[in-house]
Length: 293
Image 1: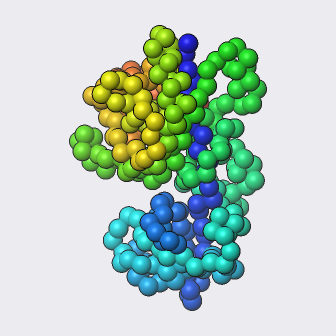
Image 2: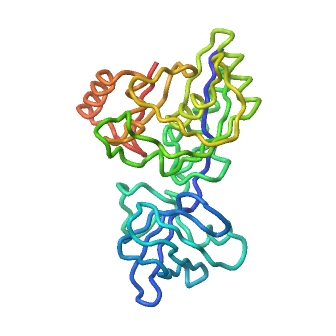
């Protein structure tokens, strides 16, 4: 009666590399969230040197952006100009936004474009992959289905909030920025029925866990939702839906590590991390994972 819940979000080419107009200085942009027609909030490098009114060109000037705000904010506001459908322009000019600790001196490869998507990625909108899902190959997934495993899907578009560093000493004061998610009626019903029958809910990744725990009502049941997850999970949080969590080894001072510690206990998780480091496990996006039961 157990049910495996996966996140079917798909990473879009949110990284742009361009040049300041007219100086030609290099500018890197990571699109974070759309604020209006052709207006995006973005992480920009070097953000402090781009003044309000500056213009950046991308892809032989097919895509252009004007900076709308003054330096000082982590996220900058950009208004884009382009010809043709926005998604087609991004596919041509943009790149897969790999995490900054993955170095690619010659640029993102086609292998990265494929590897940095889960096999069940369908709903485009994430700026980072739900990395726990990267461990599933078609062969592993087929074996699960052959053995009668129940699998259902949610969508949470991984955004800046997921990987924004925790900058406060009191983690209870940290807030994860809202991220768009959808829990359809079929998925909610499948999970509720599994729990009613004594089955366990196994969340593949912290994003799945966050979406599910954001959708529980006062009766302890999931309700279909299409909104923004604004739940911040830190130690002391009481989980009401998930019974097991498949997750990678995360960066320190991250909301992901806080969620894992909230689920399994800080001391246990740190012990597991020490064991993983001693045994030479790989950490972070392309690294190993653990199943917490």
